[in-house]
Image (cartoon, rainbow, N blue to C red; front, top):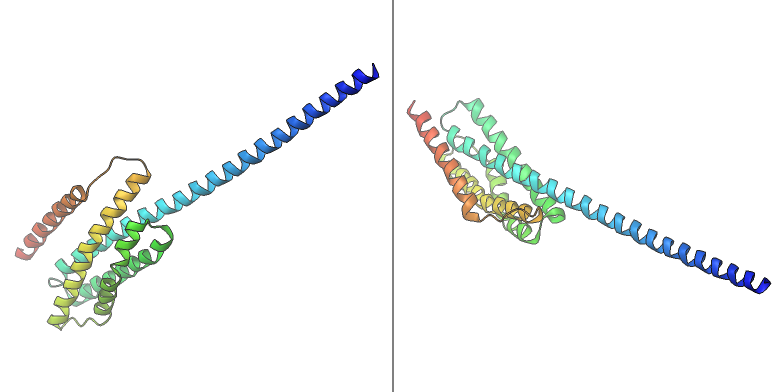
Length: 198
């Protein structure tokens, strides 16, 4: 009987030990998996937040540039100074997006943004050295702003495509977004023509 009791005790002990080890292994695996998932989710949230910020910044930049181009010749000197200050501020925000892209952007977006670096540097120089009386500088600034704006449209398409892919939304093409941009530019152009006639 004492042998049976000893065997029973050993079986019970080994069962409890195996159960405890199994529970510990499963628990630690679940905790590690949960922590890794939480880290991935947090990284995804940060990336998505940056994409939203970058998309908004590009949109605001485009709006600021169009306001500058349309309103610069039809406004008083104070308004010209405010328009130029808005362009300068918006250009700095685009520069911040370029800097943050290294941390949050996908490779395609990063390459696209990196290709804008020299254009952005030109715009910053033209804005800093701008003299309202110098028509040649005026034309150079506007040309640089419009060139950068056009290139930013391509970046905004890449950002939109990347975000939609990460959110498992349906694909969009550059043609889809560019046609919307062209429609908005046509409306803006018509409004500026109407404003110049009045």
